[in-house]
Image (cartoon, rainbow, N blue to C red; front, side, top):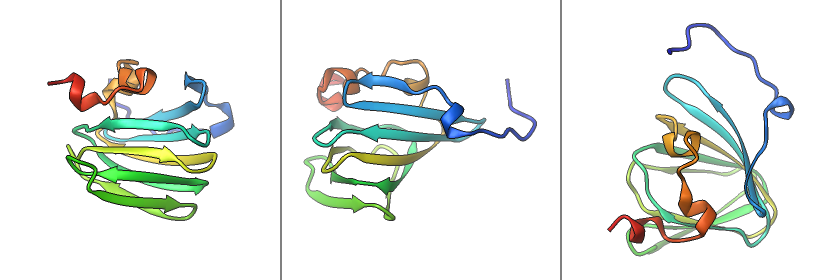
Length: 132
């Protein structure tokens, strides 16, 4: 059902989903966007994956190193106060260089996160290899 009125949230009141012992998240979703706080411990690997969703990643604290492209040919380290945009269907993976709090914005919302079918995060396997 479509959301038709303004809704107010407090991050501390949102449930924290433990995805793995090293990665957890809190989600706020509306009709066409998703906002997530992603908590990564130093050394956490986000396996290579892609998705239809456009993504904006804003690092509040810590640092994430990204490998972007089919073969991870572009490397970018995003630190506190910096933003990375990832277009739809662009393969990427990441590693937390420090304990990190990452704000991710997705359009449209990540249905795999909402349905808990984002197995690549739990298994640590390259999601693009599994889909071939």
